[in-house]
Amino acid sequence: MANVGTLPMEDRKVSLREVAEFADNLEPFSDNLREQILAPRPRKVAPIYTISELAEMCSLTRQQIQYLVTRDDASLPTGTLNGNGRSRTFTLPEVRAWVKMASDVYQTRLGNEDGNFKGKVLTTAQLKGGSAKTTTTVCLAQALTLLGRNVLLIDLDPQASASELCGLYAEKEISGEDTVLPYIYDHNIEGGLSGKVQSTYWDGLDIIPGHTFLYGAEFLLPARQKTVQGYRFWAVLRQGLEPLRSQYDYILIDTSPSLSYMNLNALLAADALVMPMIPENLDFISSLAFWRLFSDVAEDFLPYEEDKVYEFISILLSKVDYGKTSSAPVVRQWAQSAYGRWLDPFEIPSSSVMSGGALSFSTALDVVSTHSTAKSLQRVRQPMMQYARWLDDMFVKSWKESA
Ligand SMILES: Nc1ncnc2c1ncn2[C@@H]1O[C@H](COP(=O)(O)OP(=O)(O)OP(=O)(O)O)[C@@H](O)[C@H]1O
Ligand SMILES: [Mg+2]
Image (cartoon, rainbow, N blue to C red; front, side, top):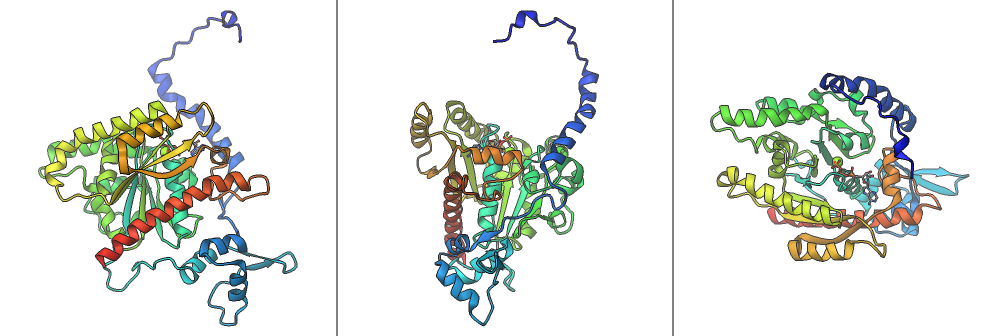
């Protein structure tokens, strides 16, 4: 251990003004880091898929794919031949086209002329910071596009991590104007939030990004509630999303680790909730506190929301440590007792490919599989894809019921 007794006792006083001005000194750090990590435009590129990966996603064999590719009618994308014609690869848009046309995935009524289709809103929430909310939301969004779905991601977190994972350079390329905030200020904007949608490097995934200014909502919403008669501070986002629901199969909302006014909007806009939870003591206690807080604030709006029903609430164990000394078995049991059916059987293992991915602003679905990482990647990709399929099945059931 370092001998702390030898450290010089220099003056460490910091005035509030200095703290306030400190951010300017830090800017070069984040700029440099990003420049080192993020390649020049296009900052992120979607993966290229092998024929085996395509076959798995379509539930077909490689041979069936080969046959369909070489058939004459050429309705399916043929991919690109590499290595003197020995291997064939497919881009993300090609894979999505295959999944839509050649797999048995249920075709939603998205884009149907009657305009009756309503996409589903899924909110990820948890009080505890660092509980894999953003990772889960972005991976799920990507996984759902691989099921052929069209997905919109809404980043409500002032930290804007989901926006960064989607290849946007949060501090430089996004302003408060680009977020949901202008709509929160003026909910009479025509088309609701439609004007704020941006496309990303990932086919089928659009985003309304986040920005530090989103904090503004925490002052505005309660102030309006006090001064404007009949104002429903919890329903503003839901109203803004309404026009977008006919344009996407799914709208996924990533929230900050709090029960802020903005997050309450996300909870009330949702058709279903996902709560990622690391099976550790403090995370579990924090998850219980989330529901306590929610039920306390819900008293304000419950009388107006008697018809509100979630199609499901899903607790997803994340970053699960399967080591001998892990607290996961004990906490899993507590979670089972506390959450019963809400605790779903899917678990995302703790894995260095997930934490390492964050270093390059990428997710487990972005990272290109190599011989040495294939197994570890599969360990996290597989449950994530299974979870996405399960969520999709739940919503397909609901779409079919309302058809
Ligand atoms: N399965 C996993 N294994 C290992 N590390 C993971 C895993 N999932 C996420 N992580 C890492 O954990 C950290 C926190 O994840 P993430 O940012 O998704 O959490 P969060 O709940 O969104 O955090 P915040 O509360 O700050 O918004 C990140 O560095 C991420 O790369
Ligand atoms: Mg986050």
